[in-house]
Length: 269
Image 1 (cartoon, helix red, strand yellow):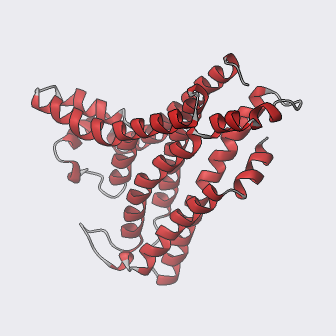
Image 2 (spheres, rainbow, N blue to C red):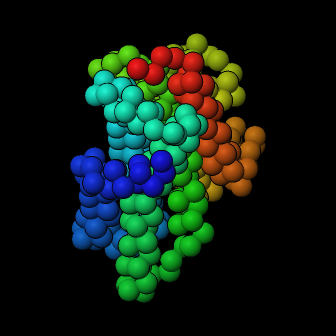
């Protein structure tokens, strides 16, 4: 099932479009000379990586959850699910084979884009921050696992493709807009303790990813203002980077496990 999902997805349009977008963004940033500029003390490959990872954070989760949420429910509507399960394939092999194949496919263009950035930095004579490149790859893998597991869960509990797509968009808007802006503003105006406000923000995997991507080049988190004191006192720099990798990964695997449990318990036809 892993090999079959890889072969099928490599021929699909969504993977080609996704790869062109993520790799094309890196090439576009290189062509526009981002690495030659200096903003807030960041220059060279560091500036290029900071810009790319912030853009990827906006594109990657939305694309993953929208494409994945319609995968299994779409197979059910098209009759492909009943056809595949007619073969001697266990439910666990079918589900987890697809999950890990999708994870590999999602991470491959990002790894290629980071490799292109490292090669460009070597040609230009920039110092290559290998630790940051590897940590960014780990953060992207954690965020991808989180939203991939959420997409699989939505796909198993939805009864139609329209419901799956609608639910994925609502969750995306909740994470991006409500939790980061509206809810936090209300809590701050209500004079909630800052530890609770920051804790709720960091429970959002997008916020955890954003803060971790900042902390690699801004260890004091000056850009976050007073909230940095709460984060650094509770975690420290190394502890927070570990949190930002482990928490979304566990959350995504938990979502996927719930999706598998639901998949086994429901009518598959």
